[in-house]
Structures are given as structure tokens and as C-alpha cells.
Length: 377
Image (cartoon, rainbow, N blue to C red):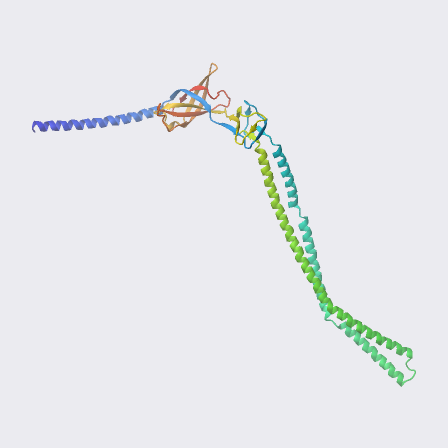
């Protein structure tokens, strides 16, 4: 191997060695970074300055326009959720609610009133019973109309009397003095009576033959009455349904009036304190204008910044210890990390975070400065 070849071989070998060394250094740097990050997660993180701030606050808007009538809870006082903080003038809404409630009472009485339906139903049943009676009467009349027995009996009796008269007259002719004139007259009278009875039976039969037609007409009248009362029953039932619907509409009207009245009340959305009143009694308040500001002091948070290396989202959930100097004494509170921003501030290369803590004893107030220690896992 000549000198040039030896030199080329040495150069290649050196380059390969350098590449391997660089790769080893890169691997070591990566491993060191990961180890540093793991060690950071295993270590407590101290933040020298954090600011105490509110978790919940709300401006209470007017849900209607009107004059502020009353302040129920003044500034600085505690409120419970749904407590009325302030009231807009509501006389008109109160009167509308009372009127709606009275109208509802009337509508409810009409909806519950069954007398009209019961009366129409009673008339219908009575007419149906009368129709049944007329049907029976029609059958009787039809049977009587075809029966000529009374005429036959009267005719037979008349014929018998005529035979008796004829025999008596013949006997008297054959045997003078055997039958008295008075007896003959009685027999004649009996025959005349029989003829009259026959005539009356025929006339009665003629009348009976007209009865079915009359009974049929009466039956049709009852059928029409049944149809009329059935229509009346249906109409009254519909009226009752309509009354029920109207009653429901009035219930809705009452709820609307109650809602309108309720909109004059300005209520607290959560437990807290009245931090500020934005309006005074007697002032006009526009719809949506703020009337009061409510803050919750029982749950606060400590806000601060971490370096980009420290501010991992994995910190969420870790316990924290918060130290606050107040009035010459140190207040120590425990909390939990609830937020770590995904963004890094381009100016200071830091990450915003906060931890929430319980302040039920109201030792801490928003705006205080504290220090914070994020505990190990």
C-alpha cells in the first residue's frame, strides 16, 4: 500500500470514528434530557410568587327593563344560591298574575262542570225510554187494527136478537095473545141496540186502524228527539273538552305571568358575597344591564407562571401547598393543580398555570400574593 492509499484509509477511519462519537453524544444528550425531565417530575417545584384570584364571579343582569324598586342584600353581605339580591318595580306583573290566577279558577270550574253533559244525557235516556214505550204502543195498535172480533161479536148478538124478534112476531101471529106487545117492543129495542153496538164496534175498528199511523208518527218524533239529544250530548262533551283545553291555556297564562313577575327579581346564581351594587334604588335599568356583582370566596385559585421546561400538562392533578403572609402570620393551605396552559409565552418563555384551593374559612382574599410548592407525585 503506497502513501496516498494509507492516507486515504486513515481519513476514512477517522471520519467513521467521528460519526460514531457524534451519534453517541446525541444519544447521551437525549437520555440526559429525558432523565432531567423525569427527575423534574419527581421533584417538588417551587414558585416564589403567585396571585390569589377568583374561580367564580358573575355580574347579575336585569332580565327585564324597569325601575329598581328594592335592594334586598346590600354590598358585602353573604348570599345563598337563588337569593333575591334586588327587585325591579313589579306592581303591574303582580296584578297580571292575580288576574291570570282568577281566570284559571273560572276555567277550572267550567272544565270540571259536568251538569250540562249529565242533563243532556238524562234527557237522552228519558227519550230512549219513551221511544221503547212508543214501539210497544205501536205493536199493540197494529194488533188492534187487524182485530175485528168486537164487530163480529156485536153483529152476532144483533143477529141473535133479530132472530128472537122474528120468532116472537111469528108466534104472536100464529097464537094471538101469546106474546105481549111490550115483549115485542123490548125485542125491537134489543135489536136496535145491537145494531148500534155493531155500528159503534165498526167505528171503533176504524179508529183503531188509524192508531198505528199515529203511534208511528209519535215513534218517529221520539227518534228525532233522541237524535237531537244525542247531538246535544256530543256538543256538551265537546264543550267540556274545549273547556279543558282552555283551562290548560289559562294554566300556561298563569305560568307566563309568574315568569314575567319572576323576571323582575335579580337572584344570586351561586353562594357568595355581594361585591358591588351597580345601580341605586329608583334608577331605570335597561334589559341586560348589570345590577350587582357576586363573587365566590369559598373556592379560590393561585395563579402563576412556570418555565417551559417545568410547565408540563402532566402537572394537572398534583397537590400543592400555598403559603400566604397576612397580618404578620403565615397561612398555609392545600390545593390541587387544575390548569396548565398548552401555550408558551413568546416573550418570557413561561407557561401560565393555576391551582384551586378551599377557602371556606375565608382566611384568604382575592388579590393576595403567595408562594406555592407543587408536590412530588
